[in-house]
Length: 135
Image 1 (tube, rainbow, N blue to C red):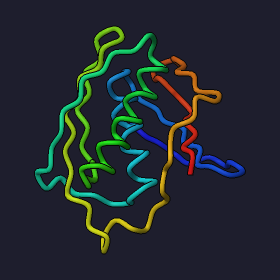
Image 2: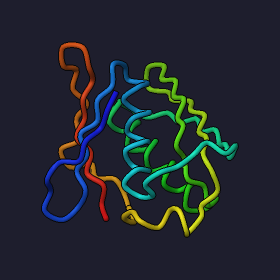
Image 3: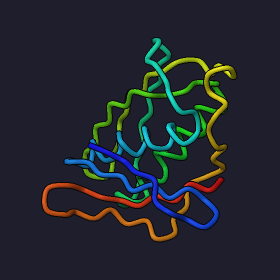
């Protein structure tokens, strides 16, 4: 569906929307990588993750934190996210491209994802969450 940056005093605040929880998590991944790297193309670099958490909010934090970790350690910029959530379990297949300093250095370095105010809300036809990325 979509994501948009909102005003925040020190960090980056993104509002993310999705018609399903799967789509919400996919858009949250896209939002985070947009902040960090800008544009990206699916050039065959892939990764799979499987996670479990106590609730959807913790699952979202764990998911984004794992994306951040894998991206930094493996030097991959992800831009395609295929997420499957079953209760409190998540499986995701991620695709993107190797990090290229000439193409991916325009964004902000994200140090982590904040739990502050994080709540996944179901509105009429969409799920919505505001995420603070610590920069």
